[in-house]
View 1 (tube, rainbow, N blue to C red):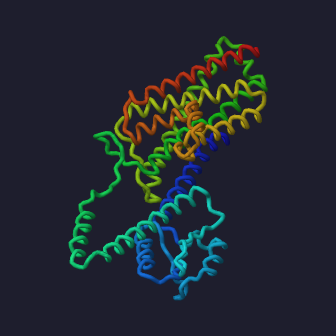
View 2: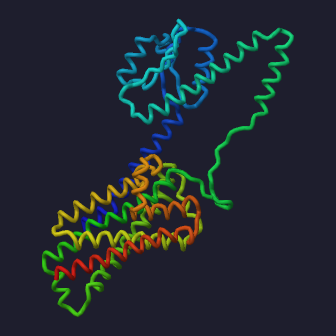
Length: 377
């Protein structure tokens, strides 16, 4: 019973923690990163730069603290303490614009933010250079040139974001659509602990030998465990569906998980993933000699496979060799099936390759487990 409680409780806690953390990070980015703005030059250029930073939506520049302009020593102190993560320093001598950075920042966040700051600064500098060029044009030509520039800018095509979805797809990608598939597979594969543990216990206590003394084959004994844990996996799937479609939208205001319309394909993908998870648990239980071995190896392998398969971090941000290795993971096959159905709104044909891999993995695990039991007996 404690093992079954863990099977349902731990994935639920993880999906809550990871999803809430990701959503909080997105809200923090959307609300703008606070940064100090030290203006020692006091020119129209610096005023325009301050306005553009504030209107960008990515940054919240702070030029005054207590109605007093921020100074360079003050900015150095506040950023070094971690009160602010970034600062833009405009020296009065016209030297290089300096970006002050908190030394404890993660490299990826630092690079992304400094690139955004650089683009905004360069844009303001480019506009200032254009205005200087226009100011040097003879007076009678200035209105004509300015009108031409303004018309050209107005005629530039707008930039918008769209998702590469199928023509008739109504699914909108969001944090729920992306997170739930990973934790469905993570929950399923964590049955390795109670399933492998029960096999080890039966071997060590002699109950497995007593079962073998009956007129039943090893495949029949293992088949009973497959059916029992298949029900457990289906219940885990239903629990994750309830969290994605009801708990998150009702209590946290998140978008509702959209299952699409390919219910038969979802059922097939779920059964195939469940069988692969059960096969993994059985082969670990067959190979392990003690309960501790089964629990330690099984839990570590599930966490590692979950990490490289995209349960906790997106696959595309991982090194190339990790992405290649992840294609060997049954958790990755199951996640890709759900992403095909929940986001790309695929069909049975689109999940067929990974589904076959999951079933083949299950078959390999069962055959190998039977061979291990037969050899030991």
